[in-house]
Structure formats: C-alpha cells, structure tokens
Amino acid sequence: MKITIKESPKYEGQEVTIGCWLLQKRGSGKLQFLQLRDGSGFMQGVVVKANDEDLFAVAKGLNQETSMYVTGTIKSDDRSSFGYEMEVSNIEIIQAAEGYPITPKEHGPEFLLDNRHLWLRSRKQHAVMNIRNQIIKSTHDFFFDNGFKKIDSPILTNSSPEGTTELFHTKYFDEDAFLSQSGQLYAEAAAMAHGKVFTMGPTFRAEKSKTRRHLIEFWMIEPEMAFYEHDDSLEVQEQYVEYVVQNVLEHCKLDLEALGRDTSVLEKIKAPFPRITYTEAIDLLHEKGFDDIEWGDDFGAPHETEIANHYDKPVFIVNYPKAIKSFYMEENPEDPRTVLCADLIAPEGYGEIIGGSERIHDYDTLKQRIEASGLDADAYEWYLDLRKYGSVPHSGFGLGLERTVAWLSGVQHVRETSPFPRLLNRLYP
Ligand code: 4AD
Ligand code: MG
Image 1 (cartoon, helix red, strand yellow):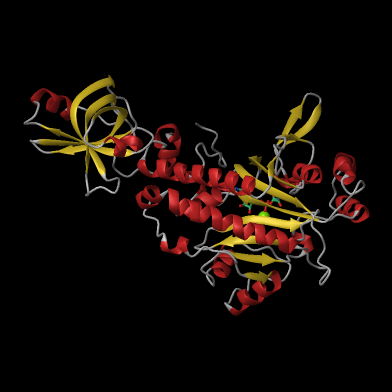
Image 2: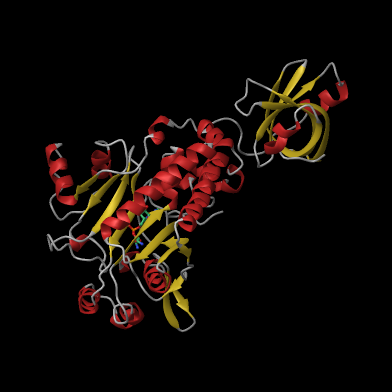
C-alpha cells in the first residue's frame, strides 16, 4: 500500500510504502534514524541492524536528498510532535543524490537564495509555504462564505493606481503598457457589477527598496465593496485578519512549531482592532522622542514599529494626509487635509499589512484629482465612467500576502515568504 506521511496515522500497525527523500540521518552502530520527507510531512524511519544487516548497510550509505521508496510498519512515537514513526523493512533507492549543496550547517542568505529551487525543501521553508498556503485557503473561504465573488484583474494594464514612479514598463505591441501595481481599479468596476468582490493576484512595484518588507513582485488580496463606507470596510478587515490568524493557528501547528513561532501572541489577534488617527500617531511619536517626523510626512519602518509596540493587536492608523496618499481616496469631511483611509500595522515590527480607503465617488472630484496627480485622464475614462452611471459610495483594501506570511511565520524577511522571490538584483532562479 502506497501512502503519504500525512496519512500514516491511519495506518498504525500496518506495513506501508512511502515515496520520499532523505532529509538527514543520524545513527549508531546498531540503529539508523532516517529523517524522511515526502512533501506532505516529515517522519522518522528507524532501521535496526539486528533485524537486517543488508538493509542497515543500505541505510548507512544513504546521502542527503536521495529519493526512494521506503517500506515499513507505522508505529506511534510519543517523542516526536508528529506522533508516528516507521520501522523500516525495505529501501528501494530511486536516485542516489550526491553532494547536495544545502547541508545542515549554516549558510548565508545569498547562497540560499541562489539555491532557492532546492532551499524550498528545507523544514522551515516548507513550513513557511504551508502557512502561505493556509492563508490563501482561508482567504478564499472567508470571502466566499461572506458573499464575495472572486474577480481576476488583468496583469497588463494602462493605468497606475499607486503612483507612476514604481511602474514596470513594457510594450503591448505598439502601445506602452505597465505590469499591474494593484487590481483595485478593476475591482471597483467589478463591485458595481457584483456588489462585493475580491481579487488575488501578482502585483509589481519597480521600487528601489531593499528592505525586509519589500518585494518587486508580490501577491495582493483586494476586496472591494459597493455601498460600504470606510468604517464598514474596517470591520471587514479586522474580521478577515482574525479569521486568517485563527485558521493558521488551528491548521499549521507543526509548521509554527518547526519555525519556533511564539503562538501566544497570535492567539490574542481577535477583532476589534484599535484605531488611532494619523495626527494622534504623530503626537505619540513626538512624545516618544521621534523629532525626525512632522505632520505631513509618511511613516518609515521605525515609526510604524514604535506605534505598533503600544498594542498587542494590529492597529489601524486612519486619516492620513491627502498629499501622501493615492489620488482615488475620499476626502475626510471632518478634516479636508486628510482622507478616509487606513493602514493596518501588524505587531512585532512586521509593518503595514493592509492599505485601504473609501473611494471618491463624485465624477468631478475624481476627474480633478486625476488631473492634479499628473495622470493621463484619457487612460482613466473607463474608471470615471463608474462615477457617471449609478455611482455609489464604496470602499476596499489590499492585504499584502507575503508580509502577512512573514508576520504569522515569524520570519524576519519577506524573501522567505515567496516561493521564488523577486528582489532588487535578483531574477534567478
Ligand atoms: O498600500 P498599497 O500600495 O495599496 C494598494 O495597492 C491599494 N490599491 C490597495 C487597495 O485599496 N485595494 O499596498 C497594499 C499592501 C500593503 O499594505 C503591503 O502589505 C503590500 O500591499 N505591499 C507590499 N508587499 C511586499 N512588497 C512590496 N513592495 C509591497 N508594496 C505593498
Ligand atoms: Mg500602503
């Protein structure tokens, strides 16, 4: 019977075969302990010399990442967190690997990134991708269960929703085109057709940023909701984030353990989340001795971290100055210098994971903002049409998948949260 490691608890006491790779091994003169991995999980295989000397010799000669079919009996094992191991009775080598470059010793990040195609196999990298996968699944579950439809926005576009300096230019036959910075504008059109929608896709920022929070290519989840004012959107955001965090805690226990993640801090992530205004945040920073920032400046990573450290949950910073936010954001009627927007700042220094706002729904105001931002109004004619034919108040937001993975996994750098990260100066592998 051929099974996967994940299925092995159902086969306790039975002899089964598992297609797997050798992660590591250790042993004595009498026993070999094989750390096996098959993609679905990790399990120890035990080879006893006294039972079969030939098999013991084969096990002793196995190199890291050798692929094989291992046959044996599944036993419960209280010492491992997985809870099961295999008493091995046969090993059929498929391909004997030699000189696998990623050994159990420490390697530098550049070496590991050069070998990303292999590094993905490591225990911790496997755990991070499992957490990413769970976030993707929980995202679909949350939005589908709450009446949202998934709308796929294009990657080749003619618009620049988040500012022209970070655009990736390309040719679309004879026309100029850009790689999508955000699916938002298309999600807005879809919301006028379907009410509540979300997009999930790759987005591109030609930013020259080399920080632990920036990727050139990252995935964004962008819900958009017709008839939602900004406060309604904040409620969706905190419920969505709570749902994702609690699902990761429930379904990724072994992964969080492999990463050494402190889960007690994640257990506290329950809605509602605190809200402070941009102006209050500036005052708080001044009280804390940050003299380098004035009202009107955007926050840098140290500012966001300082603000987040006052809370044990993500915090919404609302109503940023109009001048530092995107052209489509609705003015705050209580303070026209600011807009109806929020950034959600994750705890523990992981920074902004969501940016969102209420969108301008008046035709003239939006047209004027497009022109004032130096954008080509002709390219936005279709976007302006949404304000011409049955315009309604609407709001939405974008959650950065990789920053969320980094936060929940507890890894320090977003380069470990994308299967094949695109970084400044890195397009390989
Ligand atoms: O704040 P941003 O730029 O917002 C938008 O793109 C809006 N159109 C979203 C919307 O309202 N529909 O990006 C949203 C999120 C950020 O909070 C961050 O989590 C992530 O996307 N993000 C990045 N993640 C990794 N690398 C980068 N260079 C990122 N830039 C933004
Ligand atoms: Mg932002």
